[in-house]
Image (cartoon, rainbow, N blue to C red):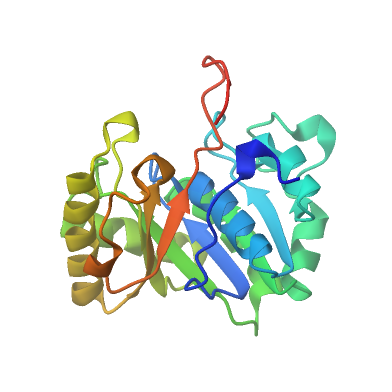
Length: 241
């Protein structure tokens, strides 16, 4: 039985494989996306691994969902146990090995913007000669990514620090509990504009599970990932996510 916390719809249109690095500025929702994408692809029969390299945000990390991910058969790579709550740049040696010998899909959840991108710079040798998808998560309703200029500045900053090129974007238009169908539609229009202006592929957009069935999928020209919220701040009691 799949744990209720991770039960979700499988969208077969998302065909990502190989090494996928997910980056984004604070509040973009990239960790939720990393977890949901890992589960989505696992339920589609793909062999998946995920590495938590989020060393910026102390509250929303892939490691918080590690037990449920492992139950699904997803390989989870984390810093040593004694460093799980650390905010220092502690990298597990296993991460380099994961990049050099990835599974069918290997997801790297990289924290923050330019600060988090230093982690990628530290892994530069492991990435040499390897193909990857480096995807920038954009939430049009967050500061700094609510304008085309801001999105491009975040992109350029990550690329400069990491020494890697972003080659795709993910649209994650949400206002948490205040997200509406109109929020999704307007967000899609915005990230489509970013895609058109940068030449970056709009890999997929997200919709919260609460709006599943209410959003007209035919309005989108890209795949859609349904998100079931996995992470909450430590001061909020978890009931049934």
